Image (cartoon, rainbow, N blue to C red; front, side, top):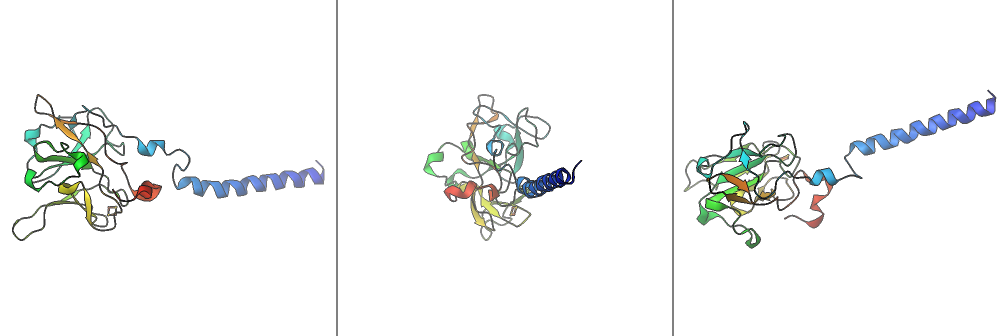
Amino acid sequence: MTRKRFLKGAAGAAGAALGAALVVPAVSLGPALDTESLYYSPWYRGRRLVDENGRPYRADDISTTTFYTAYPENVDHEVLAAPIVVVRIKPDRIDLPASRAGWAPEGILAYSKICTHGGCAISEYRKPLFPPTSPEPAFVCPCHYSTFDPATGGSVIYGPAGRNLPQLPLMIDHAGELRAAGDFNDPVGPSFWGVRSGGPT
Ligand code: FES
């Protein structure tokens, strides 16, 4: 091999390595070119809500004293938009946007379990022990304490989250079981990938 060819080959290899060094960190930030998967939701009208063991939830199962985690029937629980939190609230306290009338049958509401701040799971429910002097029930994310009001459409009432929890419309079928009445009102997940572009919802 001539000296010229050797130097050309070495320069090409160095250029390829430099290109890879620039591209790999950028790609690791997320699917910048293919964002479709981030919008995927397994929920649609008629899909049953089940618990972690696959048992369907009945409306009668949902009490006002706690919150429940539910999944779409026959869907991998690891899918980002699969887990939801379900609560029952006194109907006279519910104040949803007008466009969501009928989304909370018998005062039962469902929201994405994925915090819109950094994507942690909503795993705490602030439930007043003495209602006359306590704040209203709310979902709390344990990571940075973003707090969401289920009675008003999952609105952020405390913490760093930049947008409300996506809400899932519900319906109760003839057998008394809970089913989705459609898909979420907003994409599920943290906001780093640009879902705030339209402003808080
Ligand atoms: S991830 Fe939920 S508050 Fe930060």
